[in-house]
View 1 (spheres, helix red, strand yellow):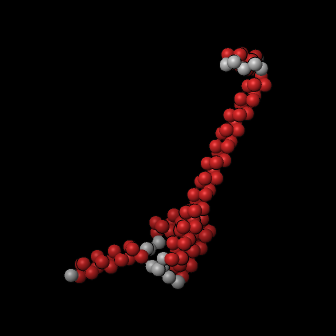
View 2: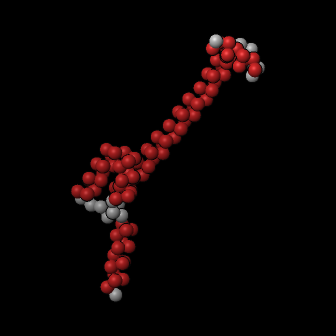
Length: 109
């Protein structure tokens, strides 16, 4: 019954035999397999680049010193890209400290 359906479907779309149907399915699977592979590799490269960027930013950030820098370094290394996201949202930044100091000076005046 299933083979008959495949033969009828193949005849309707112009395929000669069941082998052509199998070949078309294999080509479709190869296309989607390749697409998934390229997408996965792309996501890995983006997350790795972000992770390296967060490590460089952490090491150059002068607002974080001593033990706090070591803790953030461990968090970023152990949690990879997720650690980098945590670092950028939670860790203090030099610019944010400058803004806080400016607001305090403005309030004193």
